[in-house]
Image (cartoon, rainbow, N blue to C red; front, side):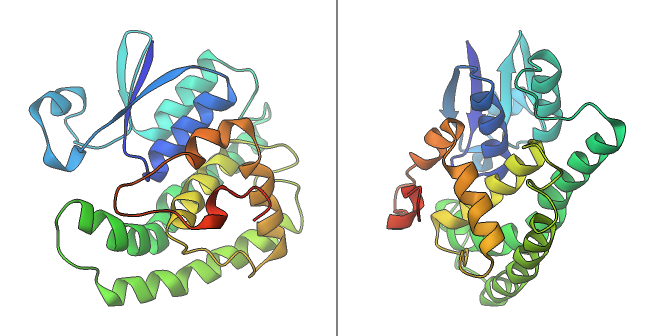
Length: 221
């Protein structure tokens, strides 16, 4: 049995969950309060971060490394193209969301509004929230520009880049922090991703004290 130690709104965990689900790999989800740095969890990952995937007799950490392992061991359906140039573009876009978008948007909105309360770390920093709300506009515009030239974020086929982006945006959508009316290309793209069977468990997530908005599970917004 594949087991994923995760946190429901973590975009890095969601990216791994989407990869597993797209390849129809059954997984047991184990919610982990990683910030408490429990000794048993630290033995799984000394970095005290999620996701941690137990698969093929190994404990694996770091979402990008995990997704690449899943891709190499279960290549169908493919989430990485065959060509070197195309693979580079997928990896570039994954890094864009897991690094730049995460730093400029996710950490300033989701972590301030939700994580601080869940982890009992005080109140949201209003300056960070305002910065995140400002920064997401630029990222949505950039995505819209890309999607005006391509069918998907990294090319003509859906890839891990789309799952990385959708993982972050779905977590932010859970707390109503995405203006889907800002760009039609982005809204259409997300509707396609949101409608995939791999997304079902993501849309079923419930975080105590933080009910999702009505449109969160609406495939037609």
